[in-house]
Image (cartoon, rainbow, N blue to C red; front, side, top):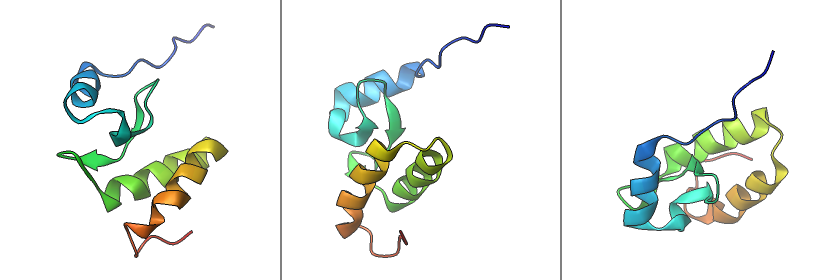
Length: 76
């Protein structure tokens, strides 16, 4: 059984074009969006941390730890 590779939804491309690659923790693959209307969102960071832990993505977890200054209520 073969699996198709994950493909980013079309709206993420327009979102990156409008707000820039800084709104994604993996801008090349458009994964882990962490912005809402161009501003960093604490709930999005929490969700990104959950999915990064689930997939054991240490690179993304390190980026989330760097941005912890913005959100005080996220536990690491």
